[in-house]
Image (cartoon, rainbow, N blue to C red; front, side, top):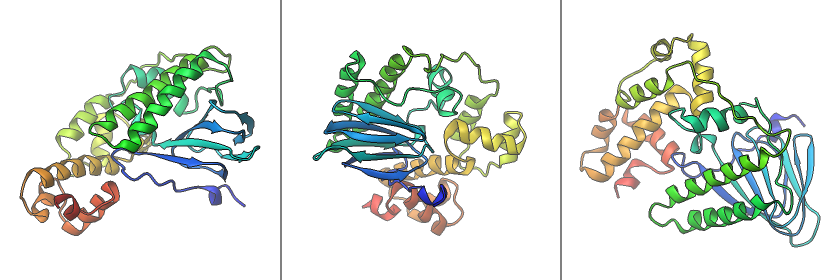
Length: 281
């Protein structure tokens, strides 16, 4: 069996808020393009992350980076755990702020290594457990503004985990690297000009990179390709217009930059998991 056959297409219901929660007792070896936290509720679990094998007990937490091969097998009857799976774009700073360069970027680009799990009885574990519970409760309740609280708790978990990791030799050292490219300026331009047909060559020129190098760096910085990022901006604006105006769908498609209503519909459904007409209803 090859590594590619182990790739899992994890279902994240809303690509504009890419996170999902799963309740389980085991999972076979696989990998995916998202980050995952595994939090033990009951029993005992043997978990493999790449070549590392750990045992998780109630209250303990394991961290799995994107594209890491991982699997978990119960060692006791009644074992239960919760998995939070999310795209890194949910926590990375789109403006490349201090949190991006000092904390997330060094690890998510595999320049630094964090521990696989939080060891039992560590004082940070109790705080993380509370945040984990609040995150799950908010995600399931779907109350107004639950997205803000879910994201806040997710960032709190990362902050506490980073503090925990800093106690150990293999933890990441805070990086002081400064991004030399003007990506914040580019992202501002994309938000202002998302209706236009902005090519890779044009975007690369703005940040003084070759087109090939730009594609790699842009994907690393935003977790999306240029066209995916522009589509996300367009679809978010289209959703607003669908809810706030009575303009026909075909007209809204043109307003946000799509020349084809059919193509607009396909992209909208891929990102929002529903058709434009359903949003309008």
